[in-house]
Image (cartoon, rainbow, N blue to C red):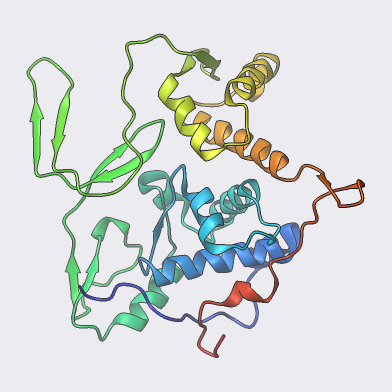
Length: 290
């Protein structure tokens, strides 16, 4: 299989205003999260990475140490700010749930342009690469973007029954969160939306959140959300944005649980220290070494 990612990338000596904005608000942790995201993109897919519901948790586990002081909620906030200020392309995220940018793609394709084969997904491109010698386009994936998650599935057969909106997808080959299944059982709780409709929460939703946020009482937090939305009518969410609201809320509660006071050996209590990530955060090789 042809190599996809790259081993190093250029990091400007002088950061632009967008990066400076992140660093001004979140400090060195904000800068570290952005650089780590670039590392993830360049070394894995090369010019993008998927960013779905479970991505912040996996990113934290795989790219930061236990004493880094970086949390799921912090990662979620920084990614949201990066989408707003142009570090990542908001349109690509909304349409395909990926993090990328024209600048990332220019640097990646500039590095790999001499490779014999460069597999790309045409719909993910923000720049023109058609004249590059080794470009080979992958088959367009079937995109299933539900309120619960984003799941890309390569299919070999789709059957549609007459008079019903049912699609049977066979030979799914991509690992992702399972598509949302419409349940005939009544919802556990319903959250009010800004259009005066409700977003129903089912058992499978709660089970998924329990895996992502093991320190959180999911049902109790959902009740709190409902109470907050009932009391803040003008700040209710859209059907499209309610999942982000729920996950941000739960991530914040998960972070609170992880940072509770700890007993020391002499019986005194102290707040768990948030140490910065230390010298190991740049373990990804750069053009000038580690």
